[in-house]
Length: 133
Image (cartoon, rainbow, N blue to C red; front, side, top):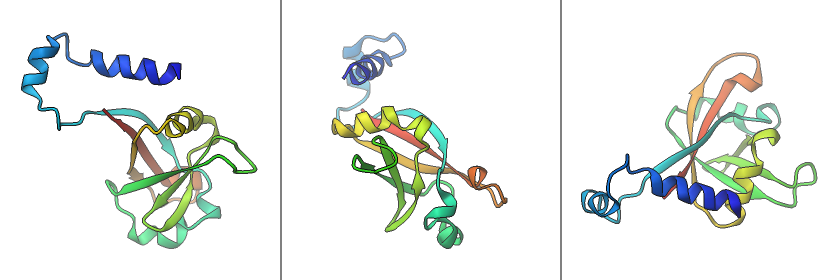
């Protein structure tokens, strides 16, 4: 809960020091800001469907994050999906904050930021996770 409060405070402070009323007039209420939370390598590339759908992936494509609280290997597991294909996971050393935000219903968006055709599965796919405000 403290993490969400801190993120909310940070988002409120993102007005470049301008008066919030002036900022509200400049940016309509329906305009959403994005806060980049992290950029990560994809974990589990070699164990899921990422290799099979590699030719269909493009930088900028939207990904779907799916929380897996009952995952037997990691209670903070966050799966990464492209359309209906399970690509892999957010690495376990980087997933705790995202899992807690998702558990609280905070909307997160993910997208592909890098695709490298190389043998090391940890270097093949990178993705960015953003929080909408």
